[in-house]
Image (cartoon, rainbow, N blue to C red; front, top):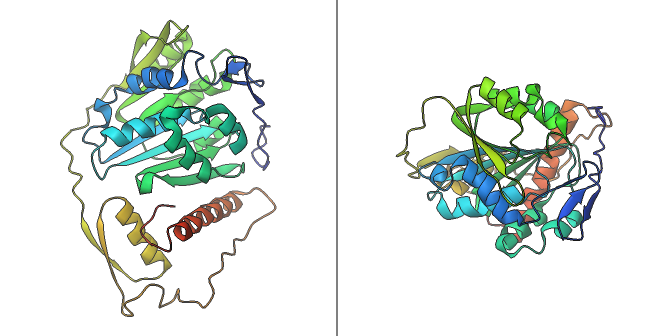
Length: 336
């Protein structure tokens, strides 16, 4: 399963225990606490990064999660962020999962949790096929950008760039899933962290705490949840982000009304800005993009080479975008 050229993803072998909690036969561990998954996420992860104050005055919040699992952490975060973040703000959420679930399995795991029912319904409607690589899902009318990376954690982190404001380390416990907690993995977390980045994790294992401390994080034990006595919150030493950041919409001109121009204007609109498209023909798609028939013709490759993965991910994203456009009756101002 470590062959990075293989298009196949391993089966997580999920089953629902007698207590109603989803479990993995692969790791022999639960996906969330039997005492209440939503409450566990709120305490361990949102509480661990300092929410709700963490979301205030941020025009964008960037969170990465190692171990997407059922998506519960993402869904609860979306709900709380949407209620607390300033108008016009955007949540960028990146999650790595080596054993992704099918849509049907997700329904069995989370379909009966009323607190996140609306967020879950949207996630399931846009859930990608289980194809190895990167999948971008745009939710909440463009305010939430979910990037799912179906791959081994070490490979995924090696290909990532940018800096994240917070991390959820939510792989199964270090004893049952050690590959998620190696020094190499935690080192990449540090390299991809913004100044004053936060970490929240259910584990309080001494080896993990020592590794994070050695990487420059201020590590604190917190009361655990359910049967677990402790969990961990960490904060990267460094200059704190200044508050009072303006999220005022900007008026932006886009020259050209072809596919690129119209899509760019849409992206600006869903981020709260006010785009104006300028085109000599005064209508969408009249120039170079004005073909009588529009076809999506991806050059899919047999070999799982990087370019093939990019093309496959772009094709699947385009399908979601155009399906959403059709559902909106052709309104160009939508999120894919």
